[in-house]
Length: 122
Image 1 (cartoon, rainbow, N blue to C red):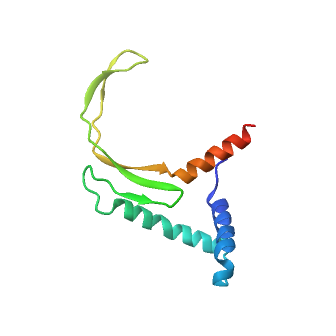
Image 2 (cartoon, one colour):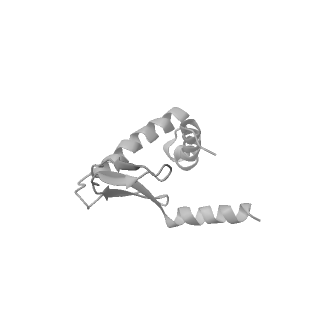
Image 3 (cartoon, helix red, strand yellow):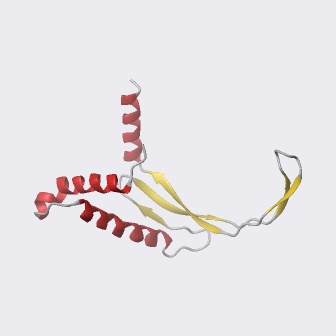
């Protein structure tokens, strides 16, 4: 099942109400949750890209969920090859160096996924 942004905001507002609602004396709405989520994305991307140098990518921890790391991928030169379907010679284009985000799941998230899988497979 793919989760939509609305479903994520609903779940997030419910979690905020459960954990912070009474302490802050506030009922969080879907709009509040959407605002908080929209504010989170630029912060994470800015931190991941901060002080990023070649081959020294940044990393941002996301609590028990995991970690986002930036991976440096070197440039490739144009090269000749063969189309595997037709057998005719072709030239593959050169690609510039890039930074690619990678997500690594945390131990707690992996453990929860394992528990869920074992409970569903019985």
